[in-house]
Length: 340
Image (cartoon, rainbow, N blue to C red; front, side, top):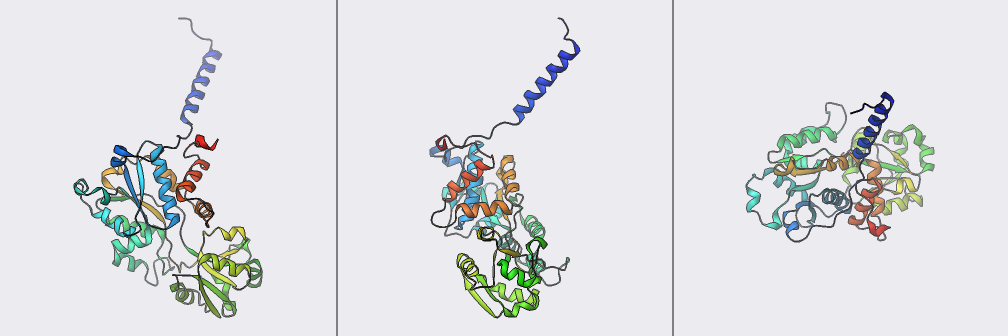
């Protein structure tokens, strides 16, 4: 056989290499329908609570698994506590699930690290949240410490890597209040910025989180002139209309960017720092496709803001549609044909 001249051999090698590169950068898989019939019976069941954002994130994992030929379905259990389901998943024996009824079987539970650590190891969690922690911050535990507490208590389940986004509270203020406090957004202001101004302020706090009032005083020595307890959307409205000077609420609320609000970060970790973390039964852990870890890694704070914006208000998308949109936009699945 005649030998190729050197330059033609080199060109052929480049063509082969390019072909391999293109093959390695394959298009995302098309979306797959929800499993039905016999496929549903063997599908991995993902337990999630009633919170719309939690349900949206559970849908991300489910739809990605289905697209990668791992049938999965989301079970929105509004009666059972999802943390209890996660704890039960960690305690089950390898043979126990075979005997469970279909309604009681779960392979994956979308958990949050704070309540999970509290339930799995109350004493360990208490040690983490004692005043005077090792890093001189607190009383809230550091996210990585929570993960360690959880992992040491698991026998029949595995905690996958938590999403990098931290679910925490921050103080939102308007640009006018920021100027008065000398808290310029470009300087990454913290709650210490409240300083001696705190006693002159009317501060809002979201319903169900009034314990934050004591923490603000304990850690930041801040006692406002007045507290107002409302739902988050009402707090935002209060800021816009100047009825409130500041509002203590979740840092991922979409309105913060929409209304150019300044966030005072909880630099002393007074408030809980929570994370989303899928917990999977040991019997399927080795069969979890890499896309699950990829989705978790992509769930940063910007992603949470986007997802919250998609499902916000009565005009928002359902968790299923919001998850599909986000997966397409981030190239985890291909655009559905019906979109065209």
